[in-house]
Image (cartoon, rainbow, N blue to C red; front, side):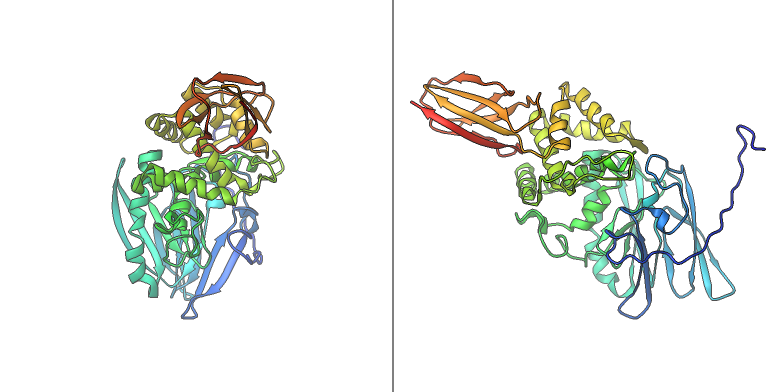
Length: 435
């Protein structure tokens, strides 16, 4: 009989033929490929469909094991790389080897991975906020030269994200980039990479601004998930925005760190062309149902808009760092993230989050010019939406706080122009002009 406080071992043996992933990482399963030299090139990727496709587990994000030993047996002429640090590499008597990787931090199921190929290794050390971070890179043998040059971006990524988000969350397990045959994914402490050692995403700029071609999208985006997804993990798939909105926004912060605030704002605005506004960002709870793909670009623009409302970049940075300190290595609900931001801004942001996360409409700043005054309100929005906004009237900045009722502001000079600040993700619509 199991007694309270006892620690027991449970051995589960299973066998089978795992599902083949036809389009990893979007289609879950195992990818069985060959490299250019006809060596086996095998990888797992299961973010959407779940890790239970290939190993028996409690396949729900709310519960994470506090550590994990991953033992994989593979042909002796190849090598396997998984999460954490290599504890032991065993030579077997049947032409195989067994690698034993240990993860010392809590890990989400879909972040566990297996990568087998004809890999070569190089490494360096990033001097970060918590000391020396071991960085290891595992690439196909014929890609080592270009990888050593291209992966210098990893230190730039770590520098930028430690500035914005706080220390890398897994110093104990190190940071790895592992080459795979698909674009890439945020496997914890074992980020997979397959973007061809080129900037952009598959050779294109997701922002259409030019800034997206200044860095490797996959390296930056998937590594950013070490903070939001792997350290701070949603408790329910419906809140996947916690992963994807913050990390789509992190691309913008990376641009900000290296090319400046206006460059980053231009990058973020450029991604608005990727927004569909067809389904809400938050999905359906309790049924493993994430929300719309708008959690990426719309979520990023929501956070960019929030930065404008706060209007204090250092305060905003401390909120982002505070999130990573408060919820370090935890699974969380959307309301926890929303409440934390509201508390630390001193603003009631409930209607703001309801509008952008749970509604598909773009809030519209509706205004009329009537005999020397501007009348304005919010339309196309949730009932209590009252977000403040920057409006330039005759090129002069005014902070307005509309709601769903008409408000008015008298202007001494004749009103010639009205322009909503372009960094707010809203629409604007003039109704009438009466002299």
